[in-house]
Length: 361
Image (cartoon, rainbow, N blue to C red; front, side, top):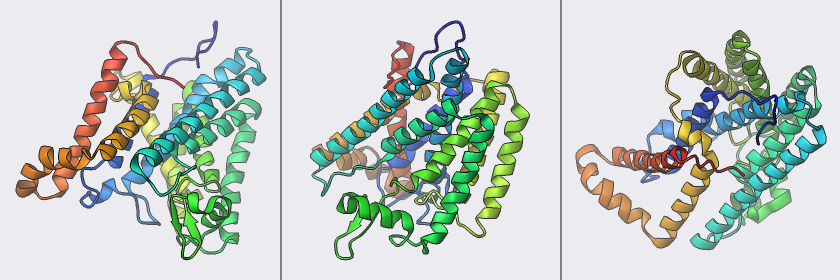
């Protein structure tokens, strides 16, 4: 979305860089050579807890919020119609959700999966983009903070009211099972229970992460760097304290996890701004950042195609495992494959960036 003159929103290279590094991290953790041999930091926590991998998705949603504050709100302040901006946001959100559904349709078709999965990463991004955009357009900053606090406390109350936080038995899983049952990411026909890490109810927590990004982006736009640093530290401390009574949990996107991951995201944004925007350091990740959708969707199609054609295993075995594993063990070749995958897509988006090809939806 482009701002119209005379008030074009400033472009922060740090935001593009941070978005790009986050997308690169997504590709890295999603595509090891061998899922049986992955270093622990590159795996999600089994249930409760938070590994570096568990920070990747909240970082991206946080940056979605930052981008709303930097790209949408300035248009409103320049006199654009709320209604027109809302229609633009809704259309883009619909395209993001549609792309997610299309990718899942390809996976179902090519890989002969047992069922089509309606929920997913892009679907959650689209929903959070739409809701956070509406909040940014229609609610004043103080009301946004109140809504954010209400989301955190309300989601905590719902989880407590639902009883168990255990896999399959928690409130989010029960609601998702009632809505979609066998179409969830995980479903046990014997018990009739299911779970989806990107299900509907846990999107409340993901929306809170996106709203944190909106407020952080507003601070960044107005040069309130000190507020960003203080909020980062405060969020980390509060998330750490809250985890003593409500564990970090990415699957449930618990409020403690919102604050813990959001604190790290704010710290990363403040650091990137200080180094890239203010000190002129290279914007590492820029090419991924300006073609995030192309990299994510294109890499997914590549994975589905390789798996459908039976190429994935021989490429990994011949190119990496056969000669690396006898020398270094099975974990290093799996990581080397993932790094090579990221490197390939870096070459693709770098080539696109140099030609000014920036895919938007």
